[in-house]
Image (cartoon, rainbow, N blue to C red; front, side):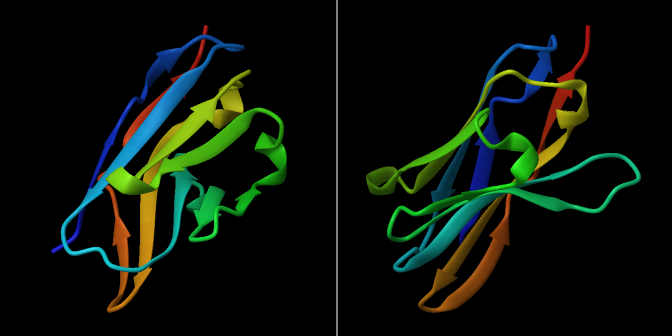
Length: 117
């Protein structure tokens, strides 16, 4: 059984920073990629950033240059450093883990990020 535990959300003023963490536990043998998605009220869930097994990263255009995804492979933990936050970044952020052996697609419980003055 694989579990993802997220932390780091909260309320921040525009221009501020937050760091999200997601720790994966359980039987994890082959990580395909880990990523962060977000879902704002009334909108579909969207990919914000991802990092694959080789360390390559990808970002949603609107967060490039502001957000950085990284990982601690030894601890199966992924981070999302969010700088220069904007009100439109307000959403519930979800951690996602895809493993290949055996195949599995796992989600965290979500953490609220609110950017407001």
